[in-house]
Image (cartoon, rainbow, N blue to C red; front, side, top):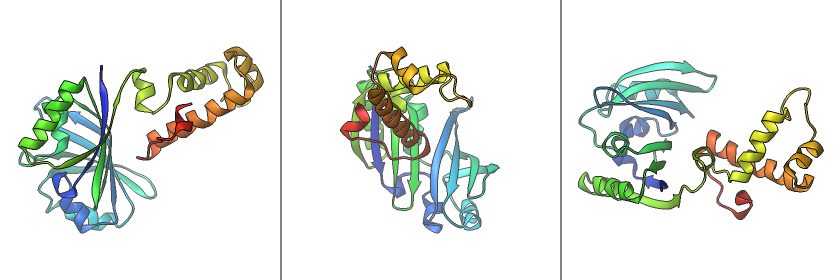
Amino acid sequence: MSVIAEFSVASEDFALHHSLTAAPEMVVEIEQVVATMEDRVMPYFWVTGGDQSKFEAAFRDDGTVTDVTAVDETEDAKLYRAQWTDNVETIVYAYVEIGATILDALGRNEGRKLRIRFDDREKLSEFREYCDVHGIVFELNQITEQEQPMASAQYDMTPKQRETLVKALEAGYYDVPQEVTMSELADELDISQQALSKRFHTGHRNLVKSTLTMSHPDDEESKT
């Protein structure tokens, strides 16, 4: 059974440490990590929160990345593609070495937070040994077993919440104009409107927290 582990990592043990030290107000959020044919790790990451020019200047002296390219830009953020250099030993290399999947990675000057999915607890143990060997210090905040479908677990939704949102989409609840009312959808799911409203509220809340922020709900309401 696969497991999802949440970690806090010291800044100096993670890539882009120099860049974030030079521009401490910036926030880096890894959107995707790609393992290339040459066993190199190529991250895509969003940078927000401050002086982009200062952050970009720091790239030139940052020994953890190379071939940095800006690939997209919004009003207050930039998306970059880069390569980790061979001489940097970071947790991201678990993507290649252990075969883990990085679900979320958020970097600030004061530290990093990651959520990583492993095939099983044995792979998680291999990862911890990998970190010990390379002197990477981290704090393991939480381990959860992935008993529900992958999409539900990744977005912190229960199976019932996922079923409700998918059913609402298929029935046209989100269309303009709506194809089905809340009352009709509740009847179709054989639940009360109050129960449906609560599933919508918690399901949407968990989905937004899991896709747009690094804060994940851990209260009882989120598991309803």
